[in-house]
Length: 44
Figure (spheres, rainbow, N blue to C red):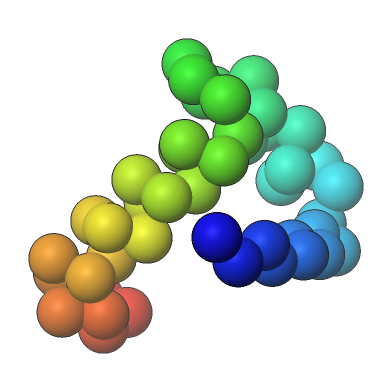
């Protein structure tokens, strides 16, 4: 399994994200990636 480093520049945004998650951070990020792929990877 590969590991990646995530750098967050906006600490306020990161704090809001952490408050809103219901699972561990890795699982939440993976789910966001999967959702982005299902949408075609485009910013809409």
